[in-house]
Image: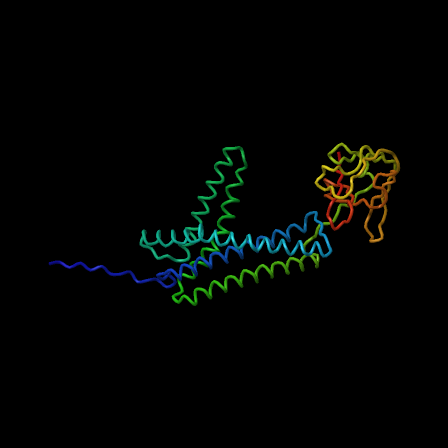
Length: 318
């Protein structure tokens, strides 16, 4: 009788081990903390990039409590998102990588895992991009979704795959802790490095536009019917000027809209910057007006009440 023997393929170095229930728990935890780290880093980069745009920060105990509450909310959202994303996306992609390698008789290497991540990212780009194109959207959605999906998926999947290569469960949970610490450290280094870059002038933080008298001449509107017309001879005419109770920026006691004419001027402030001063009786008089926006789209605004409330009455060029 003929006897058939099948040689078992030797496991290549770095291939995943057999993973039990506890091991998959460690893998899920690693994927979750990796996604949390990615989300935290994205939040830090978004904050630092926002410093290049117009922004204002409140001060005081109430504001600091609000910032602390925001940090807690962001941490909770990132934690829940990481836990769900690891179970719904990272682990299935890792299983797909292991299954596809077995079906093709290949070793499930890091390169193979990256290729599977690329295929999943491409599928996500097609699913998001094709409907967008059919609805008349831009074709740039395809490469943007592809890049975002791959960069968001690949690090988490590779970290989770590393857990399946380790044999001992204790080492697997230790790797999850290492990923958590590494993600937090990377976000902290990025945050401190970004602040240093702004502080040393390597990156340019937002500065309000410096407008000449000629650039100020014209009509400015609040978008609700209120206008302020500035003439080259220094006269100003206000019509229905003042914040409305329906404004998003409205706070405090009701304001009465004002009408009238007067003067306007600009000059150096005590801090050395240029300030705008309006001299129309009863119409937000004085040097409290400030410049905002950009050189191309400047704004004039006036703080409503305490500046820490961040409530502003804003005029745009008509």
